[in-house]
Image (cartoon, helix red, strand yellow):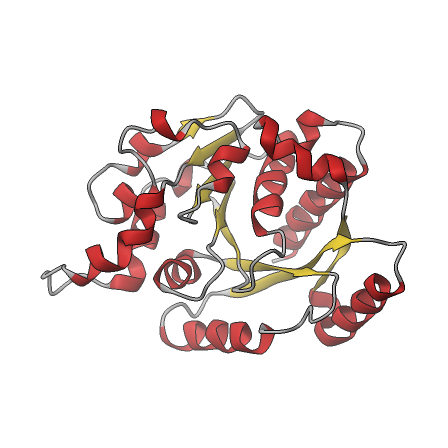
Length: 261
């Protein structure tokens, strides 16, 4: 049965979507059947894998959450190895209002994504959730549905800004909603190794999180930024790129950590 991992950080611009796309593609390349769930109303994860939103036809993560569509009907097989996606559209931004209007006494706002994923998880080795950049209803749903979390942290000044709030949210979720939730690891992203600041942030994060920090660091590279505009993960867009190697190593780390658990 699939292991569910969310990419979460309420701070925008830390590389959640980039990591979601490329980690999922790397897991698929390593033989793991992987479902990527786009839970961000911007839908950049969907676009980054070449999904045309006009072709979704009312079968997205939003319709699944409100119970209008069977999750199996919303999943699209991508052209990439072992990689499937549940896409998102801007409609997802209205999920708060939709939930608020529910009159069902058994309806639990925080558990709707878990219900969706429980219907499909046995068909996958990994389910990766790309969360929006805020700690709202959608992110709480992801925390409740997940076995573990990857926290991307950008290698720039104020890297740890807001982390305390995120960790408090995780602890509260563990206590009240999902006691099995773990932090899979903290992932350093967008490293420019030519700058002293980048390396200082690496040391700061590793001293703060210890062995929870992944050994792999995702570099800041132009080709990695270009790949989504071509609707491809980096391991297809540029197979020999340093970022391709980094995500391959990250996927192996994730698999190894899960085997230990």
